[in-house]
Image 1: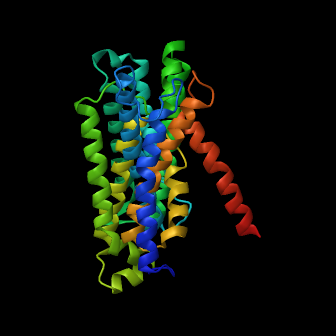
Image 2 (image 1 turned 135 degrees about the horizontal axis):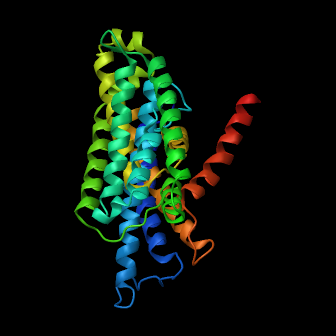
Length: 327
């Protein structure tokens, strides 16, 4: 199960990834349209900007860690290295919920309406997918994936219809949300609730590390080794889907993190999920914080949506991976 990785090397790499997190946060505090000199974050002239950037960095750590951890779980449960957190249609459901809130001007009720409706849309999608995939009390993986594809297409069509009817202001709001953003106006109660849910979801995924190790062998071998396959399948896929829903409702649709990061960290620390999940969480968080810092800096004072940055990083990587597999 250790994939040739010694425990000492795995722990060393985990420590290195742990050190990458504060390094990414420090860079995020200094980069942007207004550059903050090193060591002057706490000076009176930079305190408001530092607080905003620190909130963005913390949210980026939580969202990146959540997407990467969920990606690890989906790849293990579906035994497919190309599975990502959006494979069950969570992104389309969340996008539809967010679009309803933006286009119908429900944001006037409060800043919580967009993330709340986005989470509701994602959660509804998860519930529908699992109900459609349940056959005789069992969850069929193939039916699960097919249900996700179908619901994603239906909700995607509804989203496009709403966008076609939106005003220019609503269109801009929906487009910006769909491209992803870590913009935080202030650290309010909703912000801390989102962070707590992300932490709880990642911890829940990690608690099933042994079962995930065995599930990668296949359902029959895992069953013979004492795993309650159907129970573990339901719990892990549900937790990973809801963790994705929280991440998406917090920051919009950010692609490739849940696909790219598990691949890289698996190469570094091996396939054992006891190390892989925390490694992916640390790497995903650091990667997303750095992507946000780059997005705020490359064409400052304008901002490149974070989803564009992650796609530009992830796309070439998987083209390379595809090319190497063909070779």
